[in-house]
View 1 (cartoon, rainbow, N blue to C red):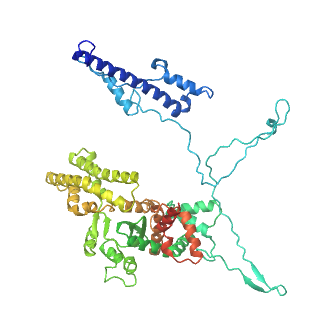
View 2 (view 1 turned 180 degrees about the vertical axis):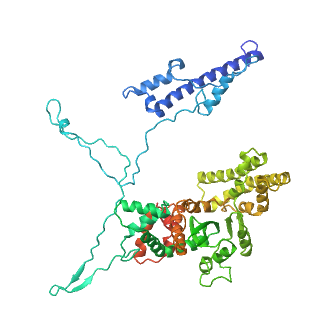
View 3 (view 1 turned 180 degrees about the horizontal axis):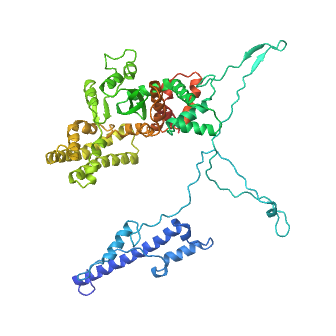
Length: 548
């Protein structure tokens, strides 16, 4: 650094000048942080802490505040960063360091979480049907103190959500009769309107509501009957069961179309769960693909899988299975570690995918108990899911869809997931001989090593799933529902349930309102439309998205 006399200054003076500049900069930063905290409280703080701004002089007051020195601002200062430490300076206190860490985490000096800022409630959903409620002023308040009669200037308007009790009505249908004017002989009578239950006692709207409550809300028939009886209906248990049968028969072509679309996907999820029946225990199977799911009832094992895929030459020719009649095109399937999946996949030349959620599950209890190997493997598997999460976020931010999103996901799996998988395999091989064969960790490690090709196959493509959670979520309503009923009344009733679950779970996967979808499909079928593939929830959702 130059001086007017010698042209240079000493190193000590230069350090002193730079240190002073650092302190001055930190003072400016602290002042700006204080002003920012004040403005944040004014704009975004709870209403009780906001400061009113004078409408006429608000800009002047704000300008005077921004130009005011720090001492004139009555706010709680944020913990400032520690100044540059010179030689011989004391170490910052632990309290100061703790306050700085808490400030970075958005906490107060005492470490407690700060209350979230207010901002008012969200507006009421504008798609709801509006119902106005008028609160009139009493007659005594419509006259001023001097006797002048007041006039209505308008209304103070506010909105909130309200619930109108569901109502059963007696629908009276009148069909016109036309005849000759002189003899009054009937020449024409308007035909009855088509219905799910022709000439039945219950209209389509009542049938749809009952099935929605059963298969979406998982309401047992006994509770549903109590609710309908409270509204004045005389619906019986036998009639309700018959409505479920009629509903399934009416929509069975649509369910077949859903089944065909699922089996035509590039890969499918498969899972099964026991279904108690009056004549014994049967199994309900779920096949998921393309944001739709179809269910079917059968046995548990490879014979049932062969029947669905049409591979069982010795099976019942009258019921060859949905795969044999509709065809299947998937090359990969995701399932749990059930051995028949491996056998049938080899017979049908299907690439087997295995679920990482199942592989992780057996390590959770040992990890909670403090086992170091289990804790390490849980962390490694969590890293695999983190790669999937970050890939999804990256595709969403970049607006990538379809093949572009699959390519980005595949790139990340090859670059990031494969090294993690290599570490998992090494850790499993090292841990296997250290545990007794009957221990939980040994069995969990063996599960991974025995199914290693199926567990790593998802990294070969960007559209393949890492786990079978989608199929398990589809079966969850049935598993939860088992707690509300003892068994399915008959073998026929299991088939109706499978068809109806196919409809409602496909709506959920396609993110379609079941009631709106049912109304649209019922109208099309009643009008004579038989293009059932165009009526599936996935197709319905795609058309709705294209319109927007």
